[in-house]
Image 1 (cartoon, rainbow, N blue to C red):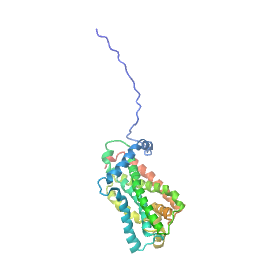
Image 2: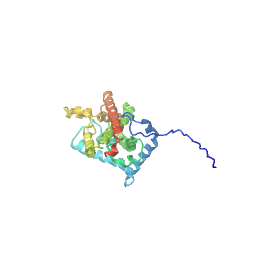
Image 3: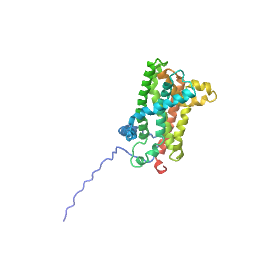
Image 4: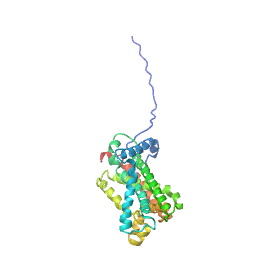
Length: 294
């Protein structure tokens, strides 16, 4: 007669490192996950920088070429032919300052506005906080912004040697705040647009055109003082643009010309916070089921 072999039941506690839920609150933004996946954020930043210039002949030199040629075109068309005032600043210096700030904002907006469409293959295969992807775009664009800022400093040194009338002001201490505002405003608008493009594909074709039009509604090619003189009936639209206060403050900080007031910066700050808040909410709601609709 065979003896029964006793069995031992082992109970293990199910302590999981990560639990993925299909449904969550609209306000459950999981910011703690962003910190846990910070290594992935850095990897995406490196990928964006390397992949974009890997198969180009000039590589990172495009960081300099684009703003230089844009400055030359603006100087010739708007400065010389149209005769638009530059607040007494050297024309190339005035335009390059506006282009440097605007390029960072527009890059953040344009590239984050297609996050869902461009990364649908990755999003459909593996889990990670989706907000990591647009954040990586904002951070990687900082590299380009820093390089173009060096170009601006070089031009400031040249015109300083020529005894041009400009100066760095006390507002330079607000420079980090201005960069953060440009980044978060572009991020917030981009999140709203990329969420809407999952259902309305036409928005993808309108983004580039819309960003270009928005630039002409911002004080990139003209100072706010000139807009008040020549566009008296429409200047309020320019002032409502949150990037107007940021670019004016940027010029005032580095060149000493432009309007820098507590009201203008506070207005840009409030609009940025509101846009970013709604952008994250809409993005958080859309990313749960966008793979089924895109």
